[in-house]
Length: 302
Image (cartoon, rainbow, N blue to C red; front, top):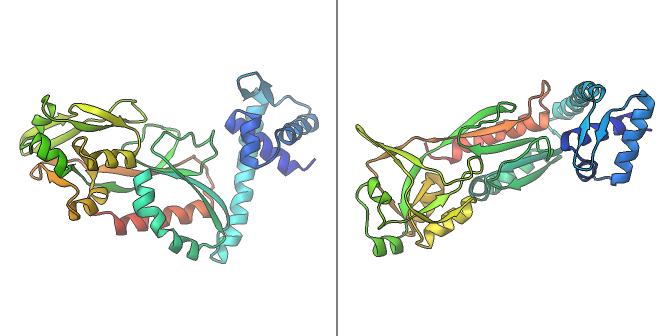
């Protein structure tokens, strides 16, 4: 039995709650992962996991061993990363999940420069607006807009998204140009709803002008949970949109969207990079965080 492989298999089973998912993460067969954990239990002469038909959970001994094993693996990873980082080339795999518009418009176009700088770093990019289980899905970090509500994660504010209200000329020709945000609550106008993955319902937006304050949601015939689909619905004239400036800008310049209520303001949406707490942040993750911070400072309007 390779003790390192067995320890790594056990940690992944605990994190994912499943031998099958752990096998997928480690790119091993389920039988091999099961064998490694069984060999580890035999060596230690303790039961590390309680197995049920629905989930695998650590025993008291397993939880204690997991905490120590996690630290040892993190320290080993840090040693290897620091040695590779000393030559300016962090290497290995980094799993990241980012919102779809940010990936399409900002991160992915800049990746050639990132890979040219870190040619040994393999980036696995998940592109979604959903909630991601960093431990269960073995994801190193996520980038998300809005306030984070998971206290178990370490969050670094990496930027903010300036917001505006927009509509397609086809929609405005059909419904008229609203002069006040309050008109969006009338039956005459329609908005495109963006469904929050945390709340499961369309977002509302706080808007201010001088002493006036409104919380606007409007009537949505369509609600979506993906940023690209949200933008596409607005461009198709389905309803009014609340968009970050970086998403709306090219379409405003092309005449496909028109800004509304320009004398009103919306609070900027904070943008966070979040990752699991770990006393030893790998060199891979450190260089990615630094790159994202510099990229967003350069690309997002302020």
